[in-house]
Length: 321
Image 1: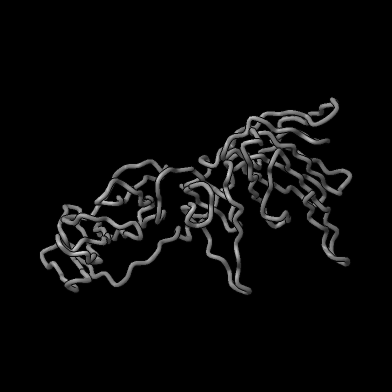
Image 2: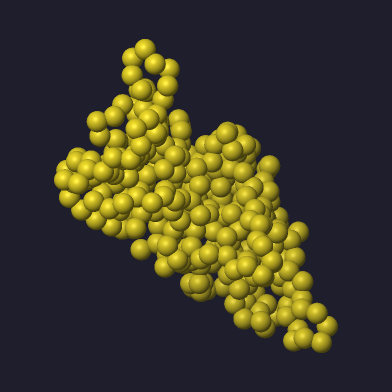
């Protein structure tokens, strides 16, 4: 049972809330508190999309709603799929509190955030490509909130790296392809659908570690390029590539910097930086969380009451528009 304690003595009395979400092999995170509204439900293959929900308030006149239905006893929610939300709303003397529990795919790890004392966290979401290299048994592309709870999650095969949002609001991620190219940069629209693939121009290799879309439309890409036949050496190459395929700038570890003054809109490249979501992209609550129920309903049968999830999917609330 996860419990949010009342405030210290001498303060205005605030009812304590408690929420327990359990199923076969499930765990939830982060630790429950009234200051957090979103939580992850980690599942296994044995969970089969079924969880039991018990939510209470210490206010004797308070009411609890699970997926919009009045819940006076444990509620069984079934039919859950990856990304579904279980909505829990508590109305009592302190007001209305809304909590969302997100059903996550099997093997999704428990994530946690570490905050430096006195330092505010950057608003927005963090984009990750989780894989066995980072200690995760399965592979997921995900965007998570400040507590590590996904607002988007999708499994993948092969390799994915450098998942990020670009300055124009679109997204990109690198993925592996057949050698010798090694990788391509996949560009995604605001619905995370693939719209284009990019690779270096005039080189064999495209590296997955980083790429940039510049405001003028040029793209900065990197490669580890074989020096030539008969040599075991590999050179690092950075190129700024124009929309028409022209090369505006090149730096090669074997030759050094080489500008291409005939390139249109050439900009200098000072450094490659990881990109994060812009501060303007705030998390939106999944639709329907604040919607009041149409009516109060009671179920006087014994044991957990069974209801079907309303299937508020993560995709409905992210990417932010």
